[in-house]
Amino acid sequence: MKIKLATANDAPIIHDVMIKAFLEYKNEIPPSSALEETVPTITAALEKGEKALIGYMQDEPVAMVRFQLEDHRLYFFRLSVIPERQGQGIAKELLRFLETYAKQNKLSTIQCKVRMSLPKNLAFYQSIGYDVYQEEVLQKPSGIDIRVACMEKYL
Image 1: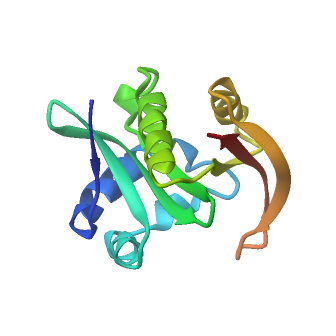
Image 2: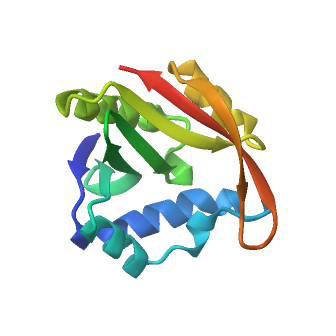
Image 3: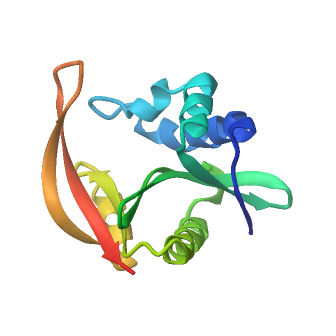
């Protein structure tokens, strides 16, 4: 897999991969807010300093992750692998690249948040060295609360 640091011009690719991957969560209560994002909102975020990686296989985008550098940590979100490529180690490869990127930027921790209602995702991160350091309840505008695990890995 070839991994590329994205630019704001890549927002349509990022959006497409993310929507394909997050469609499996459309029936969650509430559905993932990733499904409400648009190319313009992603473009704006990238122009304001958010970063993203895109993974390509045979020149086709198959995965992406968005992230921010904050103090001593790298915080990532929206890790996405298109459905037909899931289960092939692509997410792990993207995260290894992200961890290397964090180390190169002298960051000591990598963090993410995972819905508690998705035990498969929690188990995935735990299998590659992430630990739950806190649980939170996020209040959505719909009035529905979402329990999330804040996870981290020391580099």
